[in-house]
Length: 270
Figure 1: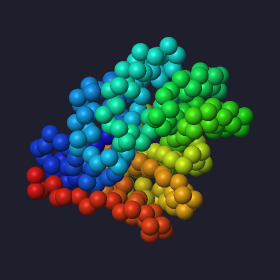
Figure 2: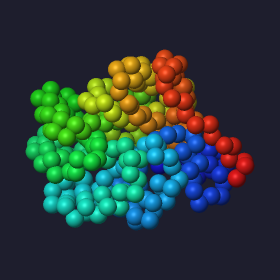
Figure 3: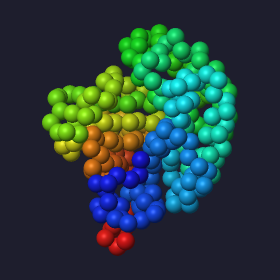
């Protein structure tokens, strides 16, 4: 996402029809989560492209009709419509994000493999699974990695371990406690383009403490020549852009050659 009411007047202008342009002054990547709920109009996607530089990274989620309702089967028509809609992003499409439901387990790997083989080669793909067998059963995890290797797809970890380390202390944390999955930790990259989703706490110090493993892991990937993308979340996401920049700064302190983030224009100027 690139807009939140609590960001207006802090990270984004109070009134603007191009908040993505302002967001791109804070961070150089975004999760395209809105596409999960509906395929956007092509004209909408054209406006996203117009507000961002060609090297800005969109990790765009496939619609739930494809992943959750049809479960990757008999979905040629909605998939074609989605790919056509996001085509204006061009090189900004860093990866198509295939988030699968928790019920999609080891028995469904054949369906996933068949779906991945049908995808066009001009896109990069990343899969997020939530069935715990993929993390706890070595054979299931290996079978998933083999399926992903067919198209050099990445396995996206959603790290919620810091969030669930202690009971919730705020309304936003209590809501997230009932909705977010308790995912086992996974830190292995399969490709040159690992993607990490990290959920911290509403307290900044707890969020920073919880991401230290990712700072070291991300720095290690960069030294290996990989190009990782890390998304930082908290239950209320109120400070997410600033936290993302803080994470980047901690990684850059370890890998000085890492490109700096853009300097945001103060929102008070809008």
